[in-house]
Amino acid sequence: MANAFMVSGLTKTYQDFVLDHVSFTVPSGSIVGLIGEKGA
Image (cartoon, rainbow, N blue to C red; front, side, top):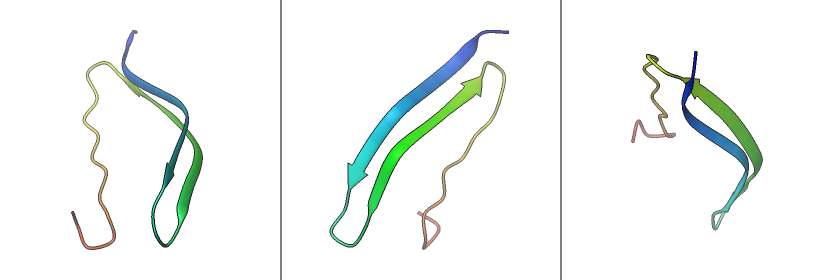
């Protein structure tokens, strides 16, 4: 099955913390949600 979305080695710097070297793959046909600290 093919991937709908792929992230590799992403780094995001915020004022209070850093997301460093984030990698993930979302297969086609999947439903994915990313929810923040306050549900945003």
